[in-house]
Length: 161
Ligand SMILES: *[C@@H]1O[C@H](CO)[C@@H](O)[C@H](O)[C@H]1NC(C)=O
Image (cartoon, rainbow, N blue to C red):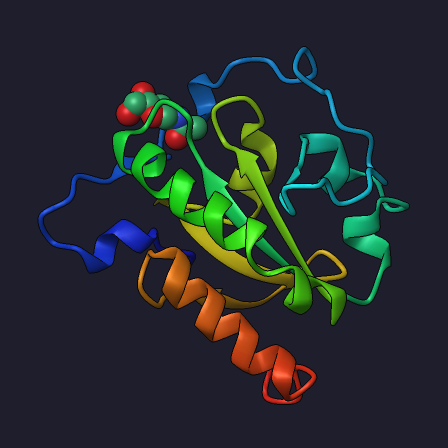
C-alpha cells in the first residue's frame, strides 16, 4: 500500500483518496502527449493515458520515474506542490543522469492513482517501466528530495532496486 507523505506529519490533515469511485470522468484535461519531452521546468505532467499506453515513455524507457500522485483540491497536496516543483526545476543534473520527475493529478485522473493503491495525497513513488520500485518517504521538501535523488544519481542509481 502506498501511504501519503502527509502521514509522516501528524499535524497535517490528509486528503484521502478513498472516494475514487465517485471520481470525475477523465480525458477532458488530457493535455500532454504520452511521449512529451521534459519541460523547461523539469516537471512532466502525466495523464491517465501516460500510464495506460504501453508505448508511453513512462512504460517504455528504462529510467526511474519519480511521480508525485497529488490532488489539486487537497490542501496538503497544494502545500507540497511548490516544493516538488522547485525540486524538479533544480534537479536537471540528476534528470540528465536518468531520473524523470513527474506528477499526476488524482482528481483529474483517478484511474492510475487507484491502480497504484494511492491511499492519500501527496504520495511520491519511484517507478520503472510502470512498476513501483519504492516509495519516497523522506522529508516533503525540495531540499530533501534534491539531496536524496542527487546522492543516488552520483552513484548512477546503483543503490536503487
Ligand atoms: C481531492 O481532494 C478533495 C478535497 O479534500 C476531495 O474531496 C477529493 O475526493 C480528492 N480526490 C481524490 C481523487 O483524492
